Image (cartoon, rainbow, N blue to C red):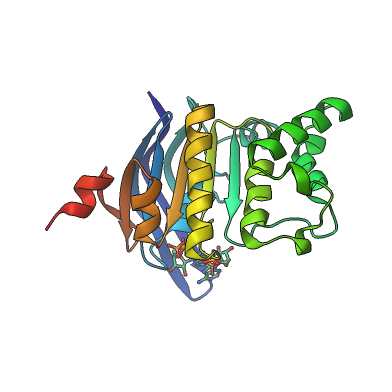
Amino acid sequence: TKLIEIKGLSKVYATPNQRVIALDKVNLSVEKGEIFGIIGLSGAGKSTLIRCINMLETPTEGSIIVDGQEITSLNKRELRIARQKIGMIFQHFNLLSSRTVFDNVMFPLEIARVPRQEAAKRTRELLELVGLADRADAFPSQLSGGQKQRVGIARALANGPKLLLSDEATSALDPQTTRSILQLLRDINRQLNLTILLITHDMNVIKEVCDRVAVIDNSQIVEVGDVLSVFSSP
Ligand code: ADP
Ligand code: ADP
């Protein structure tokens, strides 16, 4: 079954002196439980696509269904609830520097008003899951890049999302750390049956971890398929 179904999605950025077509009638489906990659050059439209799915950007046209719900026409309250189904990780981690690892991971649970004791228990489990239980009291500045991204992943999973979005999550990491983070994503995908949609400009990321891939070029999806078939064509 499909977790994401996108039809005829367009996004136009209008500035006083120009119109930029960032997405042009994009169609895309992501199955439950798969790791789906979107690859494309800088400026192709990847971030815009992921920001539309995450409800940070309002599409100009088209439909986005996530977990059976049309998300392009929600009111504020519905948006807040729908966003809890989606976790996101970022290239530059976006951690709160004044909070410990523990408090960074617990933050979304506080926002969701989860009772303190339950939130703390869940936070400990999440830190265990990402292999950072022993760094709970550290601050982000005391961590390596890979450790910071592990915190980002734990935080993204805090509210038990159905979908994890990854925006160039390994682009700031060295190759070895990249592999360990991708391995963690693969483990989480299998353990939690969590659907992951990731965007990247790095073909190695796609080959290492994705089940299927879409190639985006100049605001359009130009190819979709199994990773092997897309990348083995002559
Ligand atoms: P990618 O993530 O693949 O690098 P983006 O989605 O960031 O691509 O950008 C797609 C196109 O839309 C680019 O031409 C970019 O300059 C433009 N764009 C992105 N965000 C905005 C914005 N807020 N205002 C105007 N143009 C934008
Ligand atoms: P990154 O590639 O590091 O994700 P970007 O440069 O694509 O960052 O975008 C950073 C921010 O600037 C985003 O919010 C994006 O929407 C916005 N942006 C990107 N391109 C443009 C543009 N041409 N005009 C205005 N805003 C833009």
